[in-house]
Image (cartoon, rainbow, N blue to C red; front, side):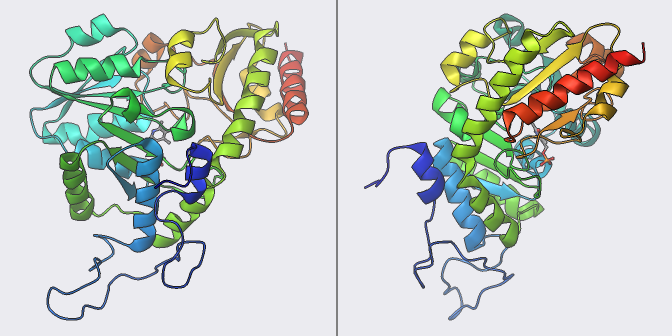
Length: 387
Ligand SMILES: *Cc1c(COP(=O)(O)O)cnc(C)c1O
């Protein structure tokens, strides 16, 4: 019998809570590679830590519970998680991916798995008719990032999952930007959820980790096989850190989102801002769908300054908000997608999908909101001074 009903409590008590042997409230860091066996074939469920480790198992059970899936798997990075999922496919198979997925997701398909005969097609997954027209007999999965990076494009996850089911193929959702606290794709019908846990789940910019959650026993066995065979597992200490971080995900996300919607409203009414992308603003693409499938608009937003502003000056004028890759940490981070996170996407594709050279992406942290607004204000003001 569950002793809690709400995700805030599951964040703290979910998965495998505490340690039965000692009563410790936290799962110990089982810093071991191997396990003593009583006799041939007689062991306590663990033989070798690439195959399974109790600290990692506690994290894997936790993320499976939070996403409402059948099983979870922890990897050394988001890319290791994505590469394990792509390992489900074989030469001749095609994957459809959202048009502005994380640059590394496009790169691994294009430059690594392409060599093994796995193909990828880029589609606007927000446009269901165009998406369906791209499903040929070779297409085996649709990989959606929602909101997609960096234009925060919203895809109707339930509709894509239905479409995938009709065609007998998998729907895969990269849920990094929302986390299970705000959005649970498996409950919307998706088969597989991927996380770069480096971002909000880790939440403190001190950890690289990836997670996969699947909705069936068959997929669980396949992903476990690939995880053990390829070996890109998360280490016990990092698994512990991630469990520790997830306990505060709820309160962190509440504050991230509160700050982000204040920043979005501030930018939206600022005459120095040409365009803003934030799924929590009623005028932005996908607002209604996002309201339906997620708790709110999340804490990532992108914008462009009007003509006459020098974005180089803007970036160097920021004092509190750090110019850095990554997102989802307690500190506010800003980045320039065209030269940083999305540099591995060819310029003609970037321009076609709207990742312009003037686009600025902001991961709104949990600092005091006045300090964040002050920093943005003074940097926007400075960015005009040189003109
Ligand atoms: C960062 C990121 C990844 C890659 O994860 P790593 O942990 O850096 O390997 C994948 N998808 C999204 C949406 C990301 O933001």
